[in-house]
Structures are given as C-alpha cells and as structure tokens.
Amino acid sequence: MKKIKVDWDLCESNAMCEALAPSHFQVDDDDFLQILDENVSDEDLANVEQAVASCPKSALSLVDG
Ligand code: SF4
Image (cartoon, rainbow, N blue to C red; front, side):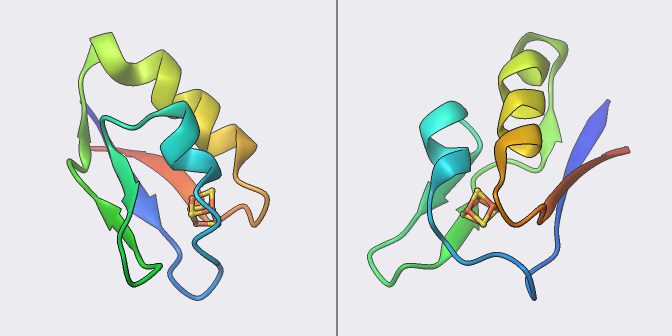
C-alpha cells in the first residue's frame, strides 16, 4: 500500500489536492492542510496520484507503506 508524504515546508494550502482527492486531503478553517488518511488504497490510488502530480508546490509524494 502507498502512503502520502507531505513536505510541510513547501505546502501553501492552496487546496489543489483537496479538489482532486477530497477523500484524503482537506484544507481546514485555519488554512492548514489536513491529511484525512495517509494510507492510499488501490481504489483511491488514481485520484491521489493525480493530486500528487498536480500540486503546484511539488509538496506531495507517495511512498511505499
Ligand atoms: S496542492 Fe500542494 S501546496 Fe496545495 S494544499 Fe495540497 S499539498 Fe499543499
């Protein structure tokens, strides 16, 4: 299973990832990104991969869990 990794120094909470994979990413009321579930099932992998690739800050990566 893959896991989501965030480089918190790079993330600027613009919520691109939330738009593409709301099952795993949510920007909260304080404008801080929350990872709802760091584990990515095969079912969600395509959406999360798209979110990772679309992050304008390249703050996201997927690692083997
Ligand atoms: S798309 Fe990237 S910069 Fe934007 S909130 Fe998600 S991880 Fe952070």
